[in-house]
Length: 240
Image 1 (tube, rainbow, N blue to C red):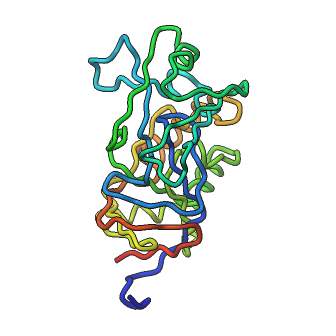
Image 2 (tube, rainbow, N blue to C red):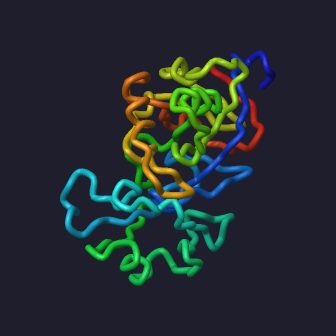
């Protein structure tokens, strides 16, 4: 396919992450395969709280435990993430298999258990995207430089246009990135997770209040796979 057939060139990929365990640290990638269920290995594991298993949201997340950002999961066989065991390194430097009851006990004295979902444990859609300009604009609004890890995207895009929130205009459109295509389905409605600094685990509620006031509670976008494929850092982003 030549460049004229790709659509409108809007930016390039400058960050790429998968999250082997829901709400734990992301793995920075240089290249990723994308299936119908998102990035290979993304959010395949999660911890369920024993006392809320019948609720609509039973997961143990950063909202319940501020420092979950600091638990670092990785695949033992990084080339086959959907078939691989997952190792978790704790903030104190110990390593556990994700399913080890000792890790669950450390995470929650009230009781949690690890579960695996081959389709991934997603709140809404399996792909998430945000632009550098959007994060920078929010940072200016709250008077600080914001770490992209607060927003837990799969893809960080540097747009050609310096204007913030360019990704909002892509809702309902299809993006081509590398050999994959994704439909942008909706804006990303934000919760208290973005108030928590991934380095210090300290909360700043002003960040969420600002997003609610200025952006209808949304920042970045969600999407679904239209055509599985491979994408990589520095890939161009096209709106079809």
